Image 1: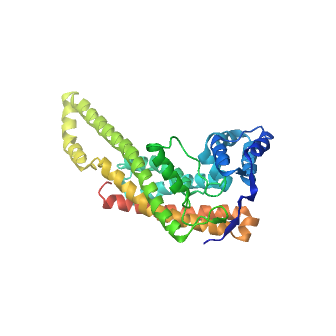
Image 2: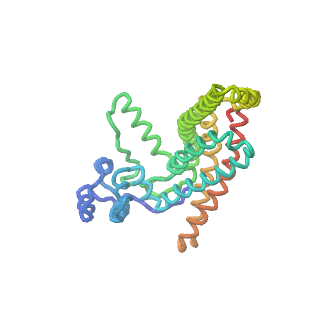
Image 3: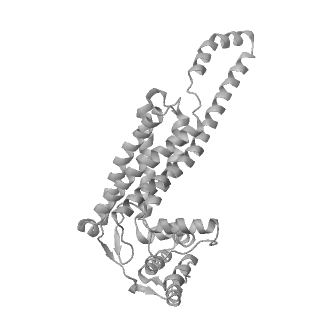
Length: 334
């Protein structure tokens, strides 16, 4: 919808005033915000106030907010951002374990390498899933995008991509803010497709890393088993005969071992899963969370929004975890 908060440019402070405001908290205006202020005539006082509050909080969070704009801009816009990230990681790790044990059954330990690689990759993906859809604060004037790098060649392409990204909502159901960013149905549809490409790219990269880890572990495990059998065979004649007696069983076990999954095909499965399934499901999750957060009850009792986040993401992860295993087996990579 086009409804949203009021946020015209009347709240902009000139760069000099911004520096004075932050100086009270012994802070400086971030370099990227300085560029926005010069291009658009100033920065939003409400954003600066929230930024200063985060810095005054102290501890590791203040340090991270000051150093990493990707965290700073999301926490200013949504103070529950980190809660959502940690909730996603904890729930997904638990649900992934439950789903893997349920699906693999008696062969769970035989296929443990798959589970471990899925878990490690899953943690990185959880952070990406939440971060890519999380809205960022609008620090400067409406429609102003700071340039990055040079304005020729790759620099020009990077700036064009940045402007394109800033013209779209971070998620299909991100709220419009009157006078700052108002999204049309067309922009929301394009955002859905674009996020699908982003998710697919992250999935492909993590799939390569995760499956490389799993394949390496599988090969090392099999090499160790073969080494132990060879060592037993070099013992006394009795030990050798015993080893040969078990050889048929061992050989059969080796032959029945799950083949090492193809690396690139597995990465492609991750890309497909992230780009289609995860993108769709997490857009819905974002929308449901926004719906709950917008209720009068949740605004009066913030714990309600937190409980809703846990419930929504728990249900989503149960479904998504089982769906990935089905897709991976359908593609023949597990």
